[in-house]
Length: 84
Image (cartoon, rainbow, N blue to C red):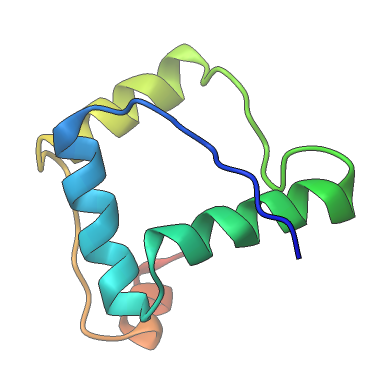
């Protein structure tokens, strides 16, 4: 089996946060990259939607990242019960 090397530069904070999440999932960064590449091949494109959010979505995401207007629930049912 031949192996190829992929080099990428990424912001240190993003790398640290992503690797922490990957550890919780029980996979290494190398395994995550292999999964991503395999999905690109299988789907003949990115395995997720890449789009620029509209103004409302961008504002909502910004507020959420600041912890503003965020509701937390103990269960899915509790969340569903708040919907009308």
